[in-house]
Length: 187
Length: 187
DNA sequence: TTCAACGTGTGACATACATCACTCCATAAT
DNA sequence: ATTATGGAGTGATGTATGTCACACGTTGAA
Image 1 (cartoon, chains in turn red, blue, orange, yellow):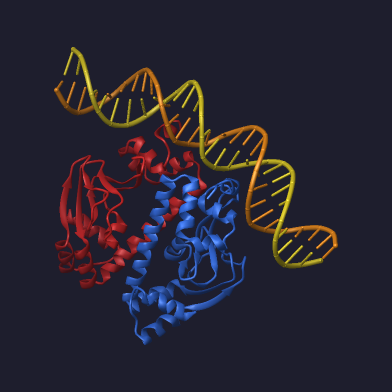
Image 2 (cartoon, protein in one colour; image 1 turned 30 degrees about the vertical axis):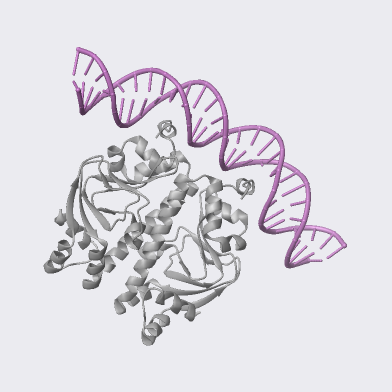
């Protein structure tokens, strides 16, 4: 698991062996089964999760108990309720495994400690945050400019491997349409 | 103008006078009139803009030449085509003034230079990026969970001052509905 | 003053989508 | 072998929204 994290970080910054050992010492591995909750809405959450293997969904349940998917995360992606993690509020979303999943997590205190002890890691997180923001803005733009069929095709184009692993009903919850409508779309 | 930038940065990190002088030396002031383009879609853009006064819109024009508003920015906000700035690609969006606007801008090279020379500024940009990401994710969630009337009311609630300054047709382009539909919504 | 440009409201109609109901199939559980 | 369960397709119907058309008031320029 730690190899994956090491490769992941070293795509952006280089670390000596002892630096990475320090980084690794602040992460804890954990294994989940398909269907398990990594965290629930309404908790205080102090962890940021790096997915080493598997697939998870970040989910918001509205007042009608309808499930909306804010994002998927698979191998080599980070996922958490970011506002809850970073501002120490309660979570408004839940993180649920769509497959058996292995994660490495870091607590908020250790994250802060890591940034102080190893400032260049902030550059790594900055880059992650930038690309997260760019991706989110692109999704907003898709919602503004494309109809359902076009958004679906764009999703298939951007994440062809995701489509294989996720039921269409879940893709519908991500795209913000009913599963029936998605079912009627010809690719 | 530089005072505003100084206060803005010092909400997150503290700078000595000489440090801020260095920061300020890398920013250039520029003044625009209502209706002017700060940059056009399709250019190579090397600047990130800090709005000191006024109001701008970040705009995407789709294949049918329809205008979609990705975001507004007013006093104390940053705005640019972030992907173009950060990855040195051509812009896909335009930045247009809705009011007479004063900005301070920094070039990409100077931004890089600043981060190297003054690493703690990365912490400042990291925080900005995190909150930008969180805000974008919330807007995605609004699009998934709320109907048009609810999104409009949420916008009024979150940015009451914005509503006073922007024509409804522009708010419609931001919310992703026709101006006629917005016009029929009772607040 | 007159006129153009802009922002806004509203009626009529078409259409995309949600919803409800039902069916079918594959797989896992008993 | 039989029965649940989950994923998927599809018809009928109602509703929200887009689109087109037109009207009205305000502002600023000629």
